[in-house]
Image 1: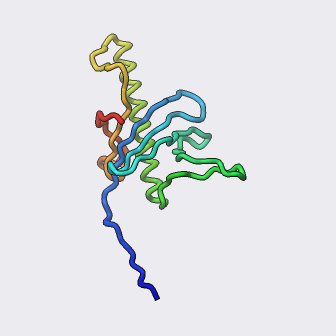
Image 2: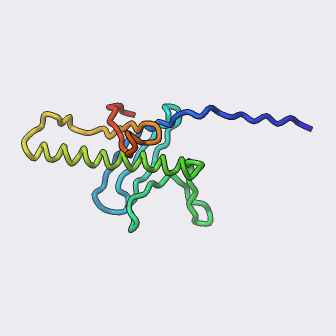
Image 3: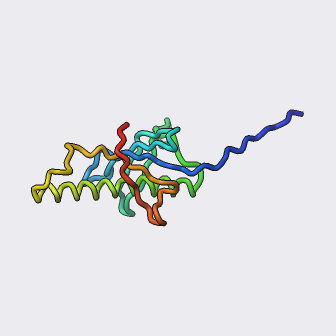
Length: 143
């Protein structure tokens, strides 16, 4: 009989660094994103999609021989999926708001805050929340 050893990893707060890019005003794919989790694990190829039911997050996937799609990387629990999606969608909404504000400023002749491009990086705190509301903050990093 073999002894089984299980390792219980310590529960750490989850922090997401999220980059939003390739924004589209119409169509089903509204943007793509890259997410770095706790500075330890990165996921590229995340899509923000639009459907009749609203926006949703689509993880990177591959097509199987029987024409089904399988996610390559994914949150393992319902709660972590909801937290992940909330953080990504919040970063997407923040990017849209930043672009809208930037466009309004430029339309009014104010180019002082314009650097040529917004690099689209956002840092969501643990659980993707600030004071109970889903939000993201800009951290100015580039990947």
